[in-house]
Length: 298
Ligand SMILES: C[S@@+](CC[C@H](N)C(=O)[O-])C[C@H]1O[C@@H](n2cnc3c(N)ncnc32)[C@H](O)[C@@H]1O
Image 1: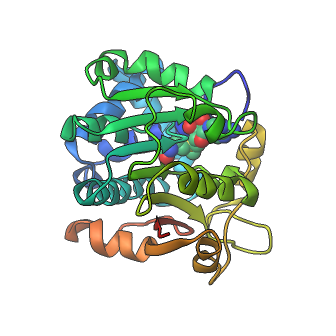
Image 2 (image 1 turned 90 degrees about the vertical axis):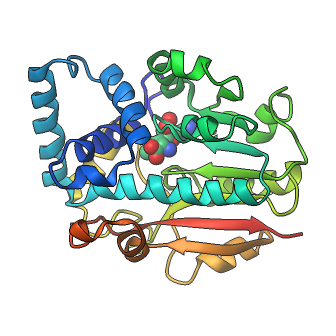
């Protein structure tokens, strides 16, 4: 990503969720709180959306982008967020006392969970350039939750260990749920392994890692399955190319090597079957990014 600008893909995701929230038939797939908080973000990163003309222009621009790059992109973002929220809620109901969201971007999972669980320790970590925008956009909401802390980190410059183990808000050794939504595709295999190692080193056995990963489409090609070449071109322009993913049958061994057990892996099939309302069951949905729940078992 560009060091002095908020992540272009984080804006793309927030705008995509907003597009679904305004779609005549798909809007029912966006839970009210997700839509409400996301709207605040979208109004902050796109000027003029609080006016009718601004809204219409953004709707045309965002709709065109999806039509050119891939159908069902934005609905995928909404379902991936709902799926992750369900998995995090399950972990918290079972035993997690801390939530760490890595590469949070303009997603609002921490605020949604903070409202439901004021006792949960929550830390959001993101690139400083992206996080500064979020802090400004959601200042009042964030201030209303004393259990939510935003910590800036450029993962290419500093590790999670260096940031968290010296931070007063992080509690080592407790059962924790870590989340990385739409992040691992920008990392290397080594950097993903470092996250797994950190979880083992600095939290309790039974802690979970909820993350998304790209399926390898062809050798060293980690793009969404039916995405046009324009996606790679646009990502390269923004400095956010996809660099990591896993091929068929590689997920479980990858996790096992770091002592993690695979609990769930939701592909587009599960997202469609388990989350989409009957009326939208046939809607277009992107293929190629899966949602995983892995647990560290000592
Ligand atoms: C596609 S966005 C996903 C945002 C959010 N998790 C979501 O799904 O809505 C990718 C996120 O990764 C973050 N990111 C990318 N490279 C990073 C780095 N080197 N260090 C920290 N964060 C990074 C960006 O700032 C951005 O927020």
